[in-house]
Image (tube, rainbow, N blue to C red; front, top):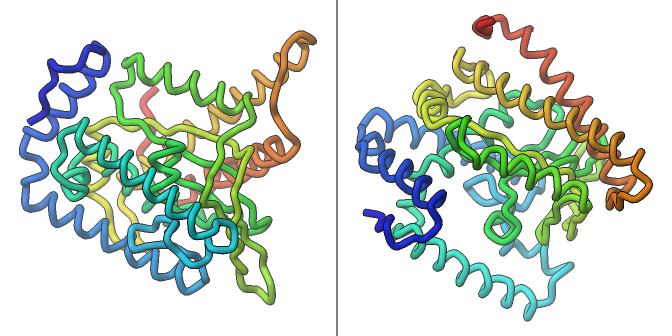
Length: 311
């Protein structure tokens, strides 16, 4: 049980209270839900195997594996050992802070479940991308959960952070401002990143430290995460109405953020006193991702099972 009152920050206490209600609700102990969650895990494991066959250094969770021999190309042994030590200490601190007894207990949280669900849905519906979870190092240290690699250009066009909150929650507005500021300071970075080149019709993977990556955030309610897992079909050829509904919602959120970023860029460009740390690479990433998101939005209509939005 989380000792909420020991934390001074009021907003953090409120967040923990919401999380505790979820954990104490017994939903994770529901047999049907455990089976659905296990089914989702197996889907991600199968997706990881497919990526591994293409040469991607990923683990069974669909994460970039920072322990892969691939990364010896950019990190000498001592530096890799240092980064691993930093990660171990940080993860211990996180487990202690939230009073989770193990990584297995962490999977009960909404945030972890949303990250799994989001990765699975994007793997199903975003055919123009390789969808990967970031390495555990970049997840914990740089707070980025997913990267999308454009199959046509082979570049990482964006990184995604997720948040599970009530939509009226101030955390959502804070997250939006934080992500916008990160983009205008130059974007996100990955210590364990990947670049892809296509040779003879097959992807050739190159490891790289990446900077100036466009970053977006995706919100989803506790109830939507719950329903998405319950109705998830572990097949890339089949999908439920709820999966399409959630995916459509996430695409709309991404589209809105892209438009907002472009609008603020235009406004800031008019202010001669503003210092805008954006690069050509970052802008190109936003443009490429914007076109792919628009295409994904249009393709949703072809699925025919999307419930009509209430006016």
